[in-house]
Image 1 (tube, rainbow, N blue to C red):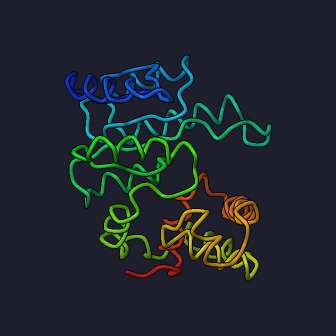
Image 2 (cartoon, helix red, strand yellow):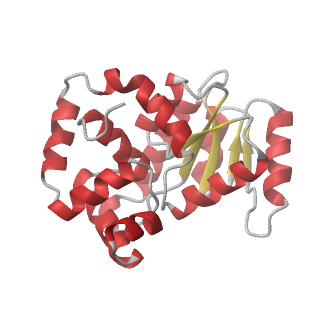
Length: 228
């Protein structure tokens, strides 16, 4: 894991918490976006906790550059991994900076004052990739900015066309992903095995050209699959 925050005490607190877990380890820390980009160019981190507001390069630009650099080094066509999962840290759950970070490729966001157990579960959740982080918090943000997401654009048209290519079953699974359900919850609701759901999710993300489930949820709002 990597921690990016301009406040030393915040980084230290997160690092102590994470390193206290047998299955988690902090491998890099950075005080701003520039440091984060440099650190993650040479150090592999599966999950990055990224403060959104920092002096100099903010978390949005850092997220974009880190993921772009990973794609440059490990093209998706090579069958390589999708790169680090970035969790944006914010003070306000209706922070439009968080939405910008998700558009930049972040896998979700988390409130800085979240309880320790929630932060740890969020890290593990985003690493597994089987659910959207803090669905209620993410939903409040997306409901808040939904009018902006649905403004006509070439990107929205492309996403609508991609959604139209989903099969009927994939559309069902997509709608449940957009509601924040995990793979086990989708399996239970549709009377499918978890393996089958995982396969459907993979096909959906591929057809939508979405990095992960959070990107897919944003597309669901853009295309009107989900409405506040």
